[in-house]
Length: 328
Image (cartoon, rainbow, N blue to C red):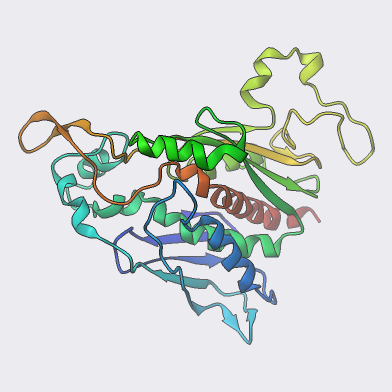
């Protein structure tokens, strides 16, 4: 439920407007000197500030209480806590009776019998991706791979040089847009993944769909491959290292990394909380009424999601990397 992984394992806790959120990371190899500046750099990529991002800015100061001694990892679980300080909970009082379209308000209310913390989306908030960035940043420092991500489309826009102007226009409409992010991992050796039910691509899908607002995941060419014949889609081997002429498979064959770049494309939906007036069913008055969502929200949450997806992928690879050691 709140834990991912078998050997490299993370457990998330907290809600958007509770005192703190955090993560317990188990499986970090002992003797790793963590570069905290790299973690801060990753957190900065997630932090708001650019056009189209929320005005809620948290310090994201990391409070580490275990797993580090004399600057090195000890091999025991690492606990990282992050305080929530910039919260305005009154903005969400209307959600008790009128769930927001596109959000988890209604299903959370029903599943948890009204005891859920609805403020800021509670457990379903994108705020919970902060500890994922931290855990993934540590995972990347443990792995011999090279990670990167890029925003390739936002709404109808594909020229990212025009992104600021485009998002200002969407914001003026009181609306939001989604987008597509590509995450790429280089220098991956052959052998990551454990068929049948721990396949690399299936674990990637499991993790990516655990990130709020993710509604589509492709490995390699993905759905565009529907227009290709087998003779075109097949990746032809060109050397004894398993490198291929094309990479339609996205670096995964039979659920196992094949030595080519791992390429994952992810669709992040438009932010559900928009300034434009919407209609929703009011559970108290038993009728559909128009209302406006309060609070502070992104016009395009996808603009801050790249580092989240990159580091989430690193968590997957760290778990399978440790599992692959059994074959060495």
